[in-house]
Length: 255
Image (cartoon, rainbow, N blue to C red; front, side, top):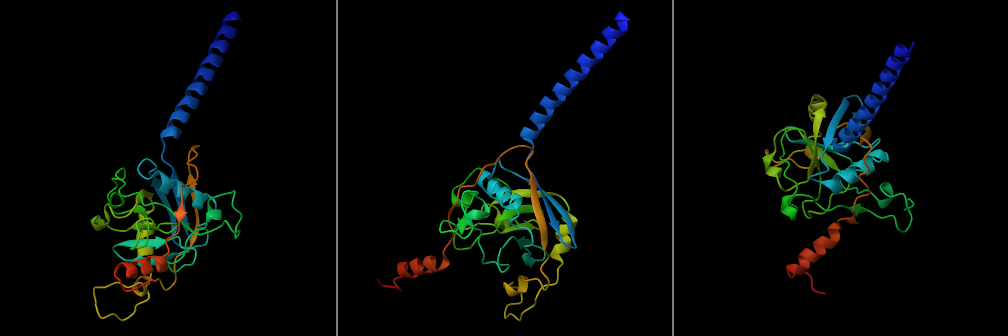
């Protein structure tokens, strides 16, 4: 009987050691595990994307906040250029919208005086940020921005459908497709509104607008227990203000 009790005690101790060891292993694994976003697209399927907080921490923080707060639910892929990229995440659906502070901050009430459009700083080398060395190969997740400002990204993102080395260093890549690249390519085949153009090789905004924009059902990010915080923000890019300053510098406007 004593031997049986001893064996039971030993087994219990071994089980407890195993549980503790597994817990420590899980904690270490989760601490080093990059966040993974699950993007559900109506009538197309699921895309999984690994995010890279080490190379673009503020951008990843912004994307996680927007995603897990439900910002992207019901928005569309409003811009599609075959053999280049698919772009989505605009609240207005036409490429001109910006997120608001209440979309990422719990301390700001929606539509209050404090609630305003925001942008985030561009984390890429052409903007003086050297930590991001991600190359734009097929399947890279990146922030869209205005061509007039490096610091104009907000909520709009794109996924490349082919290697696009011309984007290296000029846009903030912050993740990559790890499952569902076939879904991305299927979205890229969406019928596009075709407008006449004098240049057969040019792709205007109209020629990248889907007839029936694919709808994002949801985006949720698994952070594996890590809190990536609230992103640092700045005032949203003001095109009219930029244009006025541009004309002033050219001497075309005199105050």
